[in-house]
Length: 131
Picture 1 (cartoon, helix red, strand yellow):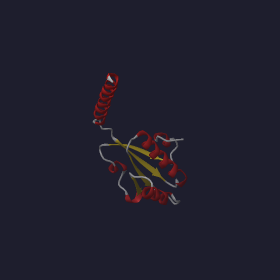
Picture 2: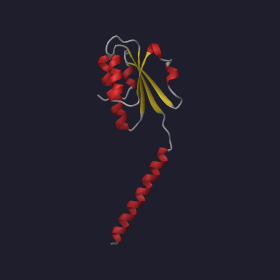
Picture 3: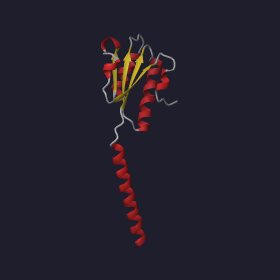
Picture 4: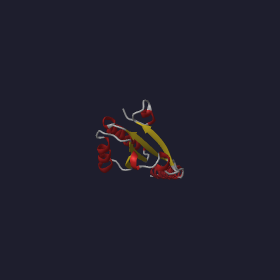
């Protein structure tokens, strides 16, 4: 019976330590990541890139914001982006370059901005992608 009280006491102390540690860690605010994805005729890559981004954020437990900025695509990039914004992903906005402000005006001060032009070689390396 005494052993049971020891086990419960140690369990209780460990639970309190975990809660204290978690409370201390949650006070440090990490900047929210804001990915600005620049597209032009990227219907083949868009859904894969967005799925990978949001899966990685889910697995890491990080909240992200994504802006798809289209530079005048003539394929189905914009309709795909609107469909993704409407149905699957929260925190996703779609903008067309002719109606948007400059990239520096899009984000707030508490965000880490990562600009990725899907058409440029090597730009996808900036993204935490799932292969």
